[in-house]
Image (tube, protein in one colour):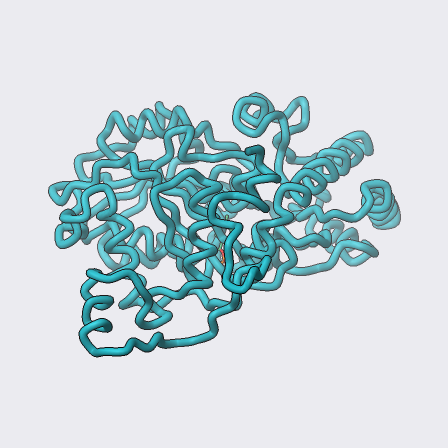
Length: 409
Ligand SMILES: *Cc1c(COP(=O)(O)O)cnc(C)c1O
């Protein structure tokens, strides 16, 4: 089955009660049983079923199964947001004294979270460019994972997943990737060697900017052992499911960042059109990036011929780029002028919507980060981020060129 067919006819996408074509929305906090013994069996995992929606819910489970199928994992846990997916994953694995090796090009919220983890005694070693050499150089006997985005938001640096996975595995640690901007349409990181895949499904998967949500998928490839991961020691009975078991039955249950069934429904609905949206969005982004480049603007877009990411786009994303591009306007003032003169692009702090969105990252989503963190993440005071939508490319190009001209850049 090819990608778009799988979105509609995949093995978890077909049979719902009463012949409903869409997954029913189960807005129930609790699930009742005929006898207390039955509920006890559900609680002790001896009987399949749902007890309380913070721990499990049929609509949320359907969403998890769909994402898991697309990524090719052994299971998935959906979360209240992308940040909950990242924080639950790291808290699931790490204990005080542990170290993380992370790309310096990360989403601002994730950089903030890694700062919070310092206060819990978990140290992150940031490297400007994550590859086999920098991973090997940064590994210590306390390193417990390598963390990177597949296509960094907003730096647009592309990770060589296979190379990073090999280097992490040689050091006996897992590679965890945030694949929000790539989506399963551009690539399936587990098939290239990553061990855990995270998505903010608030973005391209929901697709219309209507549901904050996230998900974590385990590829089933990493041998979780309690010597390296004492955090998992009570769950090693679950074998290769140890990571997922603790994530659902301990971290998610006790920290409480569960996904709302309504948002799971919206994510499942969004998934059905992920392929056609991403195809159009990536096509538009390349056209807009090329047009801006022709107009003499300094553009960052990984699928452009001269981009350092071009070869990896060919290798990992079938030559496609991403739905985001950034450009430098020359000064913060010029960047503001261009942004304010755009007609079609909405000034909003989100990505992955069907409509084009634009902002100045330095003073918005990165306003809490240091100058050093901003530069590592490719954010300068004049950097404009564009999350390209599905409008007609000619209209978008015209809009940007007119705004640039009237701002005299
Ligand atoms: C948006 C985003 C997040 C955080 O997701 P939320 O759903 O907003 O919590 C994490 N990583 C990346 C790459 C993102 O773009």
